[in-house]
Image (cartoon, rainbow, N blue to C red; front, side, top):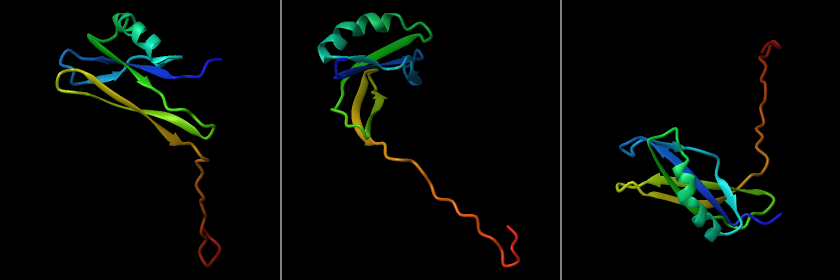
Length: 106
């Protein structure tokens, strides 16, 4: 299996480009070039929204205890600005204690 080098983020938007949502799950690519070659075709097939934009994002090298988070926004001209960053994914646990009253009740 080839390592993931790039992902394509595809957003579907309203006509004003003011309200956008992720249209599909990000698509993984082995190179930024192959992602960019596929971008125009994939945007054409977004049919749930009147407008669609996509961006190919280079992915930092992943460690086993990290995941990639994609931050994005649409600028005033309707362009998609996106960036991938790493985030640690250590155990997400919380310690909870149940305190009792002096009489033994909860």
